[in-house]
Length: 337
Image (cartoon, rainbow, N blue to C red; front, side):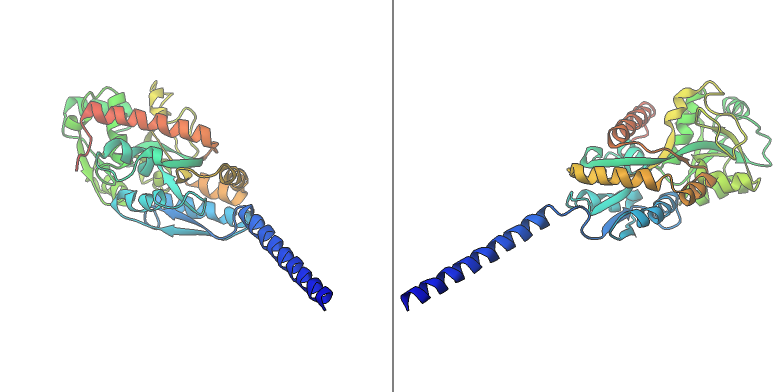
């Protein structure tokens, strides 16, 4: 009887030990499960239909074929991109909450806004994938035919020439000032009339209607207006020509410093993302950005698809921020409120 009881006890102990080992192995497997185990949320910090939204949702199509879990794109708008950006900053740095970082959210806003509720260094960038050259343009029926014409008008009659933007503190706001300063307008804040509007579409319409003389904005935002012969491009801020824009480049005009004046889109997450997550995104982006459907749609909009790895992305963004911040400080454009 004792021998039988001992045997049963030993059997129970062995079963308990086996169960414990199995549970431990399961926990170890779970702890080292390959990313991603669940859906990934990609926050778009601007509204539907804008450049950031179009870029993010166009990229999500090839990503959906590559990522083994759903990629959920969500618009979280407000405060010029700050609301959605803060929600990503506050998320766990586990790779499950990412965002479409944009020139506005991560270079213009930090450079111009003193009370921004987040800092550039609070994010990890896994890759910049899109460059939007800035194009300066006038209405197709304008008698201004070149950048030289435009600059001559401003110098001859300060405060008579206006440019439109999508709001105070936007890329368009800083682009008009930076472009004109590079062409010899020493204080564009004083010598130009800035017309801030609600959105890039309204800013382009202001030039079409004659409310504003010119606009400097992402080539992707102007591509359709240029193709339809509604706006005439005077310059693109690139070294090489941009398809669909029959105008000189900044380098053609002897202004290579304007190569820094570009829009861009990239993928970012909260500071502290594991290297495994960065590696996965690097692989996904390398394949997604060579997808023919993605390339066709993006290049038609005037975008230049150029994938940067995490280190190159950080260097590019930091450099652009420093250029913008210096301009803002030199011209007294910093927004304190």
